[in-house]
Image (cartoon, rainbow, N blue to C red; front, side):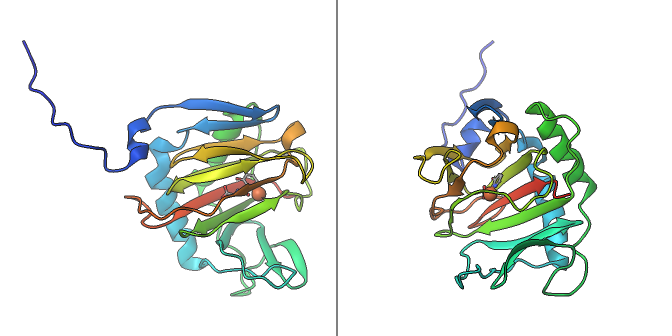
Length: 225
Ligand code: MD6
Ligand code: FE
C-alpha cells in the first residue's frame, strides 16, 4: 500500500532540518561540540531560564575599560559572574538587587552534569550559571574564562535560539580562531588541556526563532570554587 505524498514545505527554521539529530564535533583535546545534545530539553531549559530572569533580569554590564557589553547577562547559582569599572569577579549577590542570585534550577544542575559526562568529565557539579542573551548584532570578543578558582572542572555551554558563529582559538590570543556554527540545542564542553583556550562569538545575524524570538541565549555552567 502506498502512503499519500507528503507536502513539500520548507522547514520553519533551517535548524529543524537537524532536529533531534546528534552529531559530535571534537574541537581539540578536552573540547567538543555535542551537536543537538539539548534539543529534547530546550523548551524546559528555556522555561527554567525565564523563571530565573524574572528574579534577576538581564542587564548590559560595563567592562573595566568602560564599554557597555552588547550581550545582556544574568546568573543563577551560588555565584554570578559580573563586570564593572573595578574588574571582573564572581559575586554571591546580584549587584542590581543586593540579594543572592536565584538558585540554580534542578534541571540545570542535572543537565550540565549529563553533558559533562558525555564529554568525558564525570562528576561535574556547577555552582554558577551565566546567562547570555545576544540580540542581532551582539557579539563577544575573543577571551579566556579564567576567573574560576577551580580550574580542574570543565565548562558546559548550551545554545538556545538563533544560531551563531563560535570562534574557537588556541592558548594564545594570536592563534587564528576556527569558526564553528552553533545551532539551537548544541552544547559545547571544554576542560582539561583546552580549559583556557581563547574563544568568542561573531555578531549574531538577524532572524527569529520559534522558541526565543529575535535572540540567541547561551547558558554556561561553571564550577567556581
Ligand atoms: C557563548 N560562550 O557561547 C559564549 N565560555 O555565547 C562563552 O564565552 C563560553 O560557550 C566558556 C565556555 C563555553 C562558552
Ligand atoms: Fe567564555
